[in-house]
Length: 402
Image (cartoon, rainbow, N blue to C red):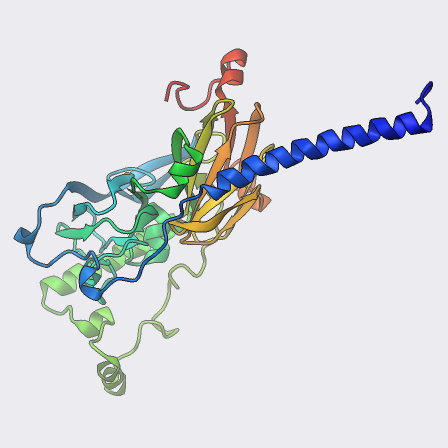
């Protein structure tokens, strides 16, 4: 610089470097202090009799929470011009979010109001095995018009979800999935970050052609099964369900033809899935609801992958904290801006509001940020700072007062 000796300039640069280092050091101390306060709940092995599973007797306990869930067929709109017939829980896409406290006893009255067979699997919840919802393994599927009562104790805490476990590629890929959030007063994420808002994003993939065609095929198959049932001809061999391997092999030796053989298998359920619509909480962009935040605010975002594909969620303009996987807190939070989430997984992140603006949050596998191949669309939403939205007259899909 003009007018300054080499020694003066060197001193100025050194001073600037010292101040920068001091600032970074102070920030590091604050960060270390913050993370040092992380009170992660560690898993402790317990004796078998202490595992919180519900007894079989209805009168043995008093249930704290009771929910009613019905399977119905719904004409759902992903975005203007795209309406699909879907199998849904309570007519919603995704199904109703269930929020309970860890340790509460929960009863869910599950009624099948369709012509198909269904169950509910409580994904990531440690339930008694007879309430795990696996057809022909832990329970019989719920028949049309029937009600099955699921009973369990809400455990462990975290972001969990539920879905139909019958004809899973078809039923779950329709819209038979929803979030179950088990809260805890000892949540280390809440204690550390003191977030003020809590969002749940269910990530979904839909093949509109498959849904339509498979719906018609499955309805036809169910009509056949109902006819067989009425005439007393519905048995284990008809359903391809056997008590053990020996019974299965005996049936084959006696001429029974398994349904997976080419001469019988015409639909190859789920094999031809080719999603052309991608959604968040039942909507494709631009109909997705934004994540609202204010400068200085901290929010928690629970991500649930209810589809069949891996997604790579990227947030613009921010580094977020990855704090939990499958509902379970990480040993330490990890700072990042892109997070992969596999089918069936849940992952929680915490976003701190330090960079006001309108920021994209989307699947970085860009073919999934499309609507029937047209960009932009699909699995994309915005992180919106409310101060700027109020200033600019920006109108998100949800109220700024929420």
